[in-house]
Amino acid sequence: MKRILLPAGGAILATGMLAAGLAGTANANPDWAFDTMAKDAPAAVDVANFWLEVNDKTNRLAQATPYTWETKATPTMSVGGGYTPDGKPGTVAPIGEEKKTAAKIKNINLPKTIGKVFFVDADKKLKWCSGTSIQSKYRNLVSTAGHCVYDEGKNASVADNWVFVPAYYQGKTPYGIFVGKTAYTHYDFSVFEDKDKDYAFVTVYNGVQIGGGNGREVTRKEFTEYTGSGTKIVQDKPITAAEYDEGVKKYGVDGPFKSVALDDKVESIGKPADVTNANVHEYTTTKGKDGVKLAGVEVTKSAYDAAKDGLENGNKYIGLTDAKPVPVSLEEYNALKAKKANGEFPGELAEVKQGDNVIGWTKQQFYVKKWVKTTTPMKYWVEVYYIVDGFIKDTGALGDNVGGQGFTWNQKTGQTVFAFGYPADAHPDGNKAYTGVTPKWTYGKTSGKVYVSAADKVEEHVGLKSSFTPGADGGPWLVKYSNAKRLGYVNGVTSLFGDQDKNNRYDLITSPYFDGETAAIYNKAAAVWSGSIVKK
Image 1 (cartoon, rainbow, N blue to C red):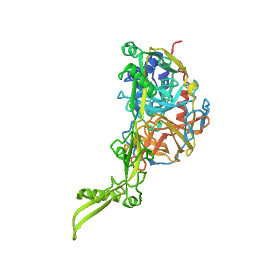
Image 2: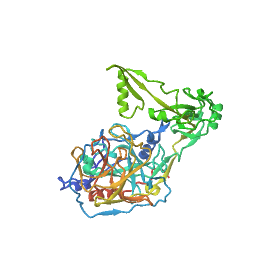
Image 3: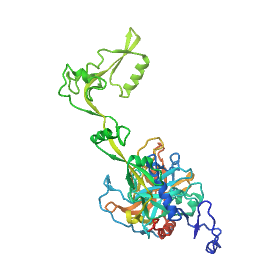
Image 4: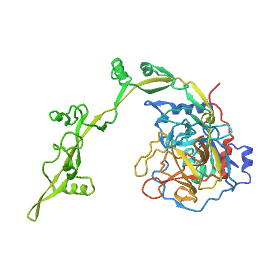
C-alpha cells in the first residue's frame, strides 16, 4: 500500500482510488511513500539553471557545502543481536561495463556511477551529499540516504532544487546535471524520521548541459557589458610565464592575465661552486644570495664536537654557535629544561653556583652548516569569458552515461563491502582528513551484530569500521564489487558516523539493513519513467 506525500502547500487528491486504498487499513502504516520534486520540464530547467548560475566566478554547485545533520560525533552506539531477514534474499544485476581506463587509487578503480547529490536545505543553504546511479527499467535512478532527500523535521517535505551530478569535480558536470523528478523512501522515515529506514531512491530526468558546454566565448568587454538573461562564466586557462609577460604587456596588470605566488619551496643543496671564505657572508643574510642561503641546524654538543671545519654541509657553524654559555632568566631556564626533557632542545643548560648557592643560569647552543635554496613557484593563467544564452543540450539517461550499480537485499552480514563517497567535514576534534573534492573508498566486513542508538532512532544498523566523515553520507555500500568492471550491488548507504573509542575521531559508519521493504520501495522507483526536459 502506498501513501502519496505531496509538496508543502499541495492539495490532497481525494480520489476514489486513494479512498479505497485507505479503507479498512486505519491502523496499518504503508511501507513506502513518494513525493514529487521537479514536476515537469520547465520546472526541471529552472532547477538546472539555478545550480549553473554563476555568482562570483563560480556556479552554485561549487559553492555548496556538505550537509551535516549532526553537530558532533554520534554517541557511542551499543551492539545488539543479529539480523533477521524478512524474506528471501534477492538481487538485481548492474548495467554497463567499464574498461580499466579511469583513475586508480591504491589499485581500486573508482566507479563513474558515483557522484554528488545537491539540494537546498530547510535553512535555504546550498548543500550536497553522496550518491550513485543504480539499475532501473529506464536507467534513471539514484540511490542515496533519506536525509539527503527529505528535510528532517519537515514532515513529507523534500529538499528544494534536488539534482545529481555523476563524476562531479569543482563545478564541472562531465555527463550533465540530472534533475530529480520523484523521491521514494520508507513511510517511517518520511513521517517519523526513523533512521533504520534512512535510504531513498530518486528518479531523475535525462541529463542536461546548459549551452551544450561552456557557451560562446566573448571578449572581456562584451562579458562586462552583457546584461542579458544568459549565464556568465569565467574559466581559468593555465599559461606559461612567457605568455603571462606578453599578456601583461598588451593588457596591463588589470587585464585578464593573472599570476599568484605559491608557497615557498625550500630544498637542501650542495655548496655552490663559487663560495669562498671571502664571499660566504653574502649567503648568510636573511634572504641569502639568489635564493641560496647558508643556514644552521641546531645539534647536540657531542655532534658539534664531532663535526669538521669548512663550508660543506654538516660542518661546524662557528658563527651561530655560542662561543660560551649565555646567561638566561630562571623562567627561560625552566622552559628550556622542559623542552630538553621532551627532546626539543639539544643545547646545554647549567646552573651557576657560588658555593652552595645558585646565583644564575646559562644555556649554550651548537649549530652545523646546511646549504638550502628557496624558490617561490608561480601560477599563471588567463581568464576566458563565456556567455551561455540558454541553449540546453540533452545528454541522455543517467544509466546510458555512467551505467548503474546492481541492487541486493536480505543478504547475510559479515560480507566484504566497498563504501564510496565524498567525505569532507572535519572530525569532531577539528582534524580535516578529506577535502570532498574527489570520491574516496573504504572497505571491510560489515558487522554481524546490529548497532543501536536511541538518540538517532536506530535499532538495527549495519556497521563498518571507517574514518569517513560527513559528506560521504548517501554514498553506496557495494557487495561483490568488480574492480575490473567497477560494478557491484548496492546493499546499503552511509547514514551515521560514530566515534566508538571516544577519541573525537570518526571510526564507524553505519547503514540501514536492506530488507524486503527496501526492495519494495526500490521496485516502485525503478519502474517509473522520467524522460527528457529538452524540447525536440
